[in-house]
Amino acid sequence: MIPKIETFKRIEADFGCNPILPEKEYFLMQVIKRLTENLSFSEGRLVFGGGTSLARAYKVMKRFSEDGDFRFVPNALLASTKQIRKKLTNFIESLDGFELSEKPENDSSKIKFKLDYAKHSEFTKSSALRPYIQVEIFFSDALRYPVERKAISSLYNEYEGLEPETELDCVAMEETAIDKISSLLWRIGSDDDYHPADMRHLHDLAILSDKLTIDEKFIQTLTAVHNKDMKNRTKDSKDLRQNIEDTVAVLSNRKSYNTDYKNYVMAMSYAPDSENLSFEQALAKFDYIAKRLV
Image (cartoon, rainbow, N blue to C red):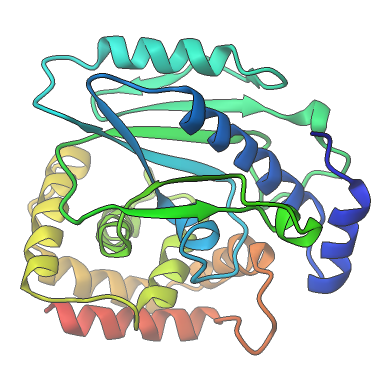
C-alpha cells in the first residue's frame, strides 16, 4: 500500500514533528510485518524488542524509532547460526521495494541489515535520522523473562483508522531495560563506542523508571549481562556498582550529552510539551533507577 502524503502532513501539524519521522516509522513497520509474517525457523523464533517495541507495541512512550531490533531465541543450544543468517539474508534481499544499502554486518552475536528506502520517501532527510532502515537480529540464549504477545501499529495506521500492521511476540520491558542499562554503561565515556543516538537509551530508561519490577531477579540478570558486555566489548573489569556511579557522574558533567539528547531524542519526540522529559529530568529518573540497583 502506498501511504498518503497528506496523512504524514496531518501528523506534522498535530505534533510539530518533521513528517519524515512518521514516514520512516511507517516503512519500518512494513519491513517488520513482512519479516515476522513470512519467515519462520525450525531452530527457534524471532522476538521483537528495543525502543520500537516500547513505542509501538507497549505504547509507553511517544518517541519515533527507526530501528527494528529482534532476538533470535533458539529452541535448543545452537551449534551454528550460519544457516539462520543465510536464510535471513536471502529473505531481506528479496524484500520488494527495499534494497540493502551495503552488505549485512555480521559478528558473533548479531547480524545487521541496512535497507535503503529513499525511493519511497517524499520528504527532506533529517540529521537526527539514519539514511536507512536498520534491522538487527541478536543471537542469544533463552530469554530471562516471558515474552508478551502484542499488536504493533504505526502512527500512520492509527491516524487512518487502519488495523495494526501485525501481532508478534515481544521482549518483556524488564529485559529491554536490562539491555539498555548495560548498553548505556559500556558506551558512555567511550569515544570509540559512543554515538549521540545512544542518548535514546537514557530517555527510554527514564520513561520506564516507574514501570519496572526491580527485584533480585532483575539485579542478578543485569549484573550477568553487564559483566558479559564489559568483558566482550571493553575488556574492562569494572563492576556494576562502580560503573553506574561513574556513568551518572560523566552524564552530569559533560555538556555535550545534553546537546546530543536534544538532537537525537527531543527531535524524535511527538509527546506534548507537558510529557516531554528534558535531559536533566531523564538523568534524574535514571539516577532513581541506579539507586534501586546499588
